[in-house]
Image (cartoon, rainbow, N blue to C red):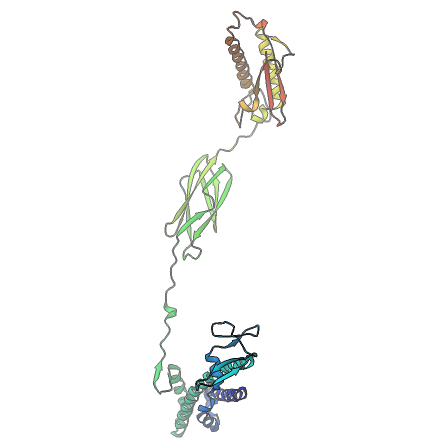
Length: 397
């Protein structure tokens, strides 16, 4: 069976070789082609090139029997078929029962593929042979009548390009493709997304965010950026928007797509910090770090001790937090970046300690300066450094 298919395929290849010549676009080569070529084309075998299968092969193929990669025989649903001595039974169209093995099944499926390919080639060559015979006949007629062969060939080629004859002799005209005239589909923008919804920048400084236009295949992904006032300026580069602070205040930045889809970013511009003076005096505004420093604590406790001594209180250096007193932490009264001069701080603290001392004695029914005198009250003010670097001030009495 395999040998017969090989022979038939060889016949198909020969027919295709003649068809190739007839399809040449060179008019001169067509006019000089030997007459035997035309005869070979018109007498090409037709029925002999049609491949067929044996009844056993047909039965195997109809049953959908195949051999899987493990060498097992399976049916059309891919399920393994039970075998007896490596064989299974199939029935042919005439009712005969035939036992076949894996090799028979492989061969039948290969023959089926070969036969299918052979039949397709045979059908194609029949049509080609018919066309070439007609073309050859036209050329011969043109030459006999004394007309120029090149002109006849050109006319024949034009006719061939505009229509194809089918096996029944009718002509089918090809319609021009309209796919190139179809307008591309427009994809609209559905949303605008910003990587940041808010920004805080210092005057004269810059920050940025990125813009994403959705969907990614939108037809027009262009956008515009505007600010609600002149507190900030913007510049764009691709999907990046850079914002620069101009004046202290706030502004809203709006990013709008071509179809008015938009998103906003709220921007706060902080005033530029003033430079710190190089010389610090008692009237210089101090930061928390400067206030909560050992030099300031030493200076402050010294002032408070002098202040109460001048009022008539008696300083007792033995007084400490273990026997009497109260605690003041510099970090509690001066958090963040509040600005006070030393003169402001010493006044605040001296008055605070006096008011607190006066209130505590009043709780016991004593009024300083009336039934108890300052000279009867001992006191001491000192500082200690904590593990976190801050300072505690103790005023004890």
